Amino acid sequence: MSDIDKVKKLRQLTGAGFKDCNGTLKETNGDIEKAIELLRVKGISKASKKMSRSAKEGVIAVSGNSEKSSIIEVNCETDFVAKNEDFINFVIELSDMNNELSSDAEKLNHGIMKNGMSVEENLVNLIAKIGEKITIGRSKTIHIEGCSNFVYHHGVIKNNISKLAVITCMKSKNLTNEVKILGKQISMHIAASNPIAIVSDNIDKEIINKEQQLITEELKNLGKPEEIINKISIGKINKFKEENSLLTQDWVMEPKKKVNDILKEFNNDDVEVKDYVRLKIGE
Image 1: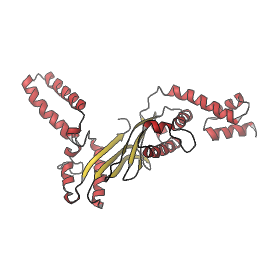
Image 2: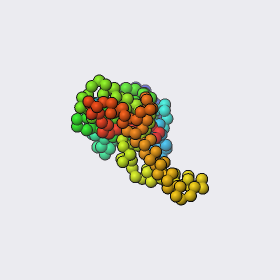
Image 3: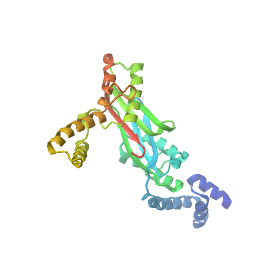
Image 4: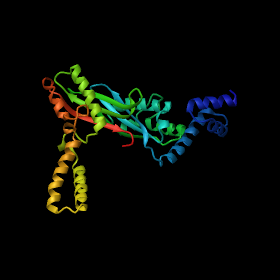
């Protein structure tokens, strides 16, 4: 095999650039196997340098079915890379593995991909090949017995990969076509309205306390007396809870109604939202 053929072969096997392949083959006296190992070592070195950079672009991927669905975020530095074929193929396989492993991050990182290498190893090689920081971000799996999952994507890049995705888990006595349509619509509502919780009682107390602090400081700056501040802040906090709880939000498709009003219209089906997850790149 000629030197140029060896370079072509090494590029095909590793995805590294011509210059890197040519130089590494010279270092290993034309031994392709040793060159692959050396490129991996170099790739790890290159990857570690890139990990200090910011990765705020990327994609959200969803895998699974109506019974068990998983969502995962994979970040990169630029939108250009987010549409790169190698990056997308990695995300697709990673997303399926994430669903199989029920979003167990440790098991996922050490999981073996189709090429026989671990997720961690493939991630390092992808960073070295593409030249950007790539990280695996947030993930969640929803699997509740007797319930159905509904998925919505916004800003679709390819198949089940997008910039924003929602999984809504709903329980219904009768999974009619109308209920399925409602499940999709509620997922769309969640994408647009970004609720913090299904009901106000489930909003994290730290969030409520922080909002209370901001309201109090705002009213003090306006010169309001203490007794007035207490009265106004109660109303503002209640409004905050209402606007950020799914069931009490204005229904995006008919703002005069609340989400809970829409659910009550399906009396014979006993429709209930049991869980949801919403992930958006950059948030």
